Image (tube, rainbow, N blue to C red; front, side, top):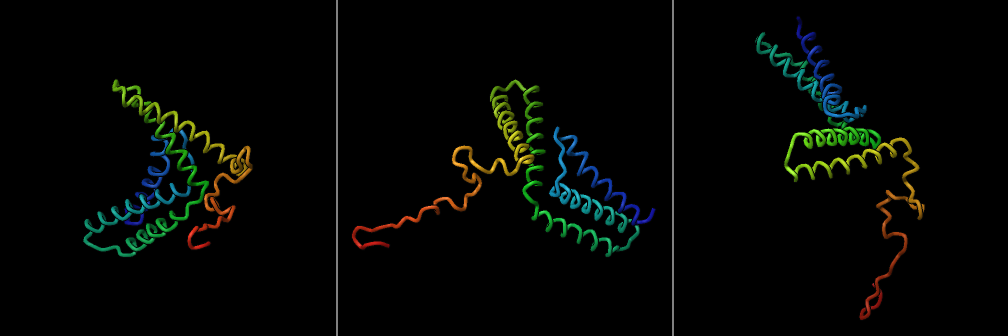
Length: 176
């Protein structure tokens, strides 16, 4: 086989393993997210670079264009990973919480240590509540933003304390 075929096959297999197979093995909830896509592209590119290095060592050559192309793909994926939006973040978080819940259930089945069982049990209850909240937020993003009683925006942390302007008065020197 030629270098392109080796590299392409390695890239595709590494991407599929990173994106789908590891997610399926780890979590009961598998969600698509651009963050996972970018991380899988980075992993597949690294594997592609390793394949090119092996080929170059065997053939005593340097395949500069492959290194530049795969390195550029890593750089672009790292740059794009910084711009993951809220929905993709929640999808990644949902998959992560499902993994933690699954792992904790397995630990509870295999241990007799009461402290570990307590930690795992507490984690399961917290993560299951988080999973329900995340799923509600993903399905009805606007509904969950207002408080039931106050009808105020629950996630607006920037305006805390700015609703009323308070003047600080100093008894001795007047107002500040």
